[in-house]
Amino acid sequence: MKHRLHSRRGFLGAAGAGLAGWIATPPAAAAGDQNPDLMVVNARVYTVDARVPKAEAFAVQAGRFAAVGANAEIRAMSSKGVPVFDAKQMTIVPGFIDCHNHAPGNTLLYEVLVGNPYEVEFVSISSIIDKLRAKARQTPPGMWVEGFFFDDTKVKDNRQLSRRDLDEVSADHPVAVRHRGGHTTFYNSKAFELAGITKDTPNPAGGTFDHDASGELNGRVTDRATAAFNRVGKRPVFSEEQRFERDLNGLAYISKQFVRYGVTSVHHEGGNLAALQQVRAHGDLLHRVSYEANGRALEAMISGGVMTGFGDEWIRFGATSEHTVDGSFSERTMALSTPYPGVVPPYKGNLTTTQDDLNAWVERVHRAGIQVNCHANGDVAIDMYLTAVERAQRLFPRPDARPKITHCTLINDDLVRRIKAAGAVPALFTSYAYYNSDKFVFYGEELMKRCMAFRSLLDAGVPVAAGSDFDPGPFDPRMAIQGMVTRTGWDGKTWGANQRISLEEALRVNTLNGAYNSREEALKGSITPGKLADFVVLADDLFTVAKDRIKNIQIVRTVVGGRTVYQA
Ligand SMILES: [Zn+2]
Image 1 (cartoon, rainbow, N blue to C red):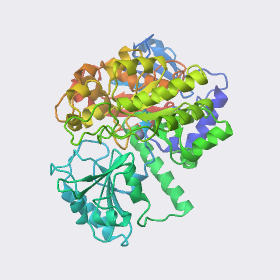
Image 2: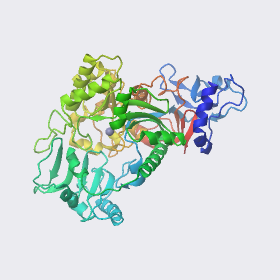
Image 3: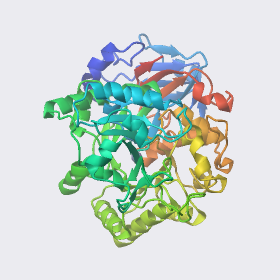
Image 4: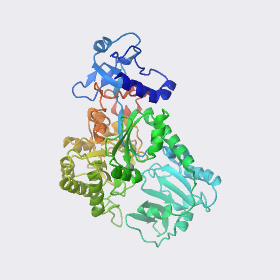
């Protein structure tokens, strides 16, 4: 134990030294000493461990929980020099786990943000135009001017952003405003001109160039149709060193944001793996990473024999990145078996792959010993993915493969049965019930009763987890939990109340079930002796505060491996 503790301490020493508050310091005594490094007493501890659901105190040793129990029991372990944290009846829960996050951080740090990444905030179209104009003034003509974190239902003007609006930014620059959902982008006339798209251009497979009532391009482009714009216009060119530097800074930046919200483990959708390791070596990685590989990294895993689970408690290869089967829930392009209510001509969303291609992809990854993970929102997409999974498991059985379903938004009874039978691990949208309640009118109550179906899936015994999908969704677990237990949004509207879950369940979804999702349930996700000492101190009791105030509970302290990584 002692040896391992020293090696970990050495690795993170630099960061530890700079952090305020108590830090789990290695015991000063000689080898074999079993004293705790830290004791926490007088807390309302919700452990998410069914054997001991509530406790008053716990001890941490070598970065792990050593004992959990009553104040007197833990105090009895005391010896001189062990720091004791008196929680003064504050609430402590396991660190939150986000199972789906696009987390490079570079956008937050370097790009023009035309919406609020973290909270519900309405912006005006003129503010978007102003920000992009300022950017255009510093940008050579012909080069892209882009805005990020746009949300089409958080616009004060109460109308769609249009091509004409973006023409006001510049006639000399291609302009793009990217929806935070990632599946739709709004372009100006210059961008359409460069891409060679006119009002008569037919839609490609899996995407659309949208038109207004008079048949003109309105500027909105969905899913695969955006590819036409990626090939044209000039973009900034960075040297290898510059790119790496930006990736380092972006990851270090977002790591600070995660722990500020009590998130201690995050499943990263790809990103610069070398930079991630460097950020850790610098002591700037404050959260734990389940790295979900795509592209070259996934190919290297397959060819090099690297399977899910390889790595350590800070950076570990998890499932693959989401392999996309259909469009977006928030941007209303997910693949439905019935047409979208009220849309003319009838529209059933976008599929972005075929069953044959999907079967082949799933089979190849599954056979390589890697946990498969597909983005499937609509019932049609979930059905296709399950078909591919069932086929792969039949041809090449592997016990407990835990195929991951990212989003898994619209279910029906048959799909739930198949999800359970396949041992699949869905990661549903977390903050959407609160944040995106303004979009559910596009689906209507009947469909919303089957969307983000935490209740149905838990009732079927499926260990459903939480996946914020940041950038698309805010990753604040308090917002997530409030939405899961109330199904009521920022606008006071409630959708699909039949899918409400209890607070206890919502806490488990955001902690232990997240650990299960990446096959790490023996290592983290609950306050249990032997598990990693990742926990969050909350100013108010999650279980007694009014349900519509959960998202306002202050995060007082975030601790990872016994070390304070955030303090209010
Ligand atoms: Zn995603």
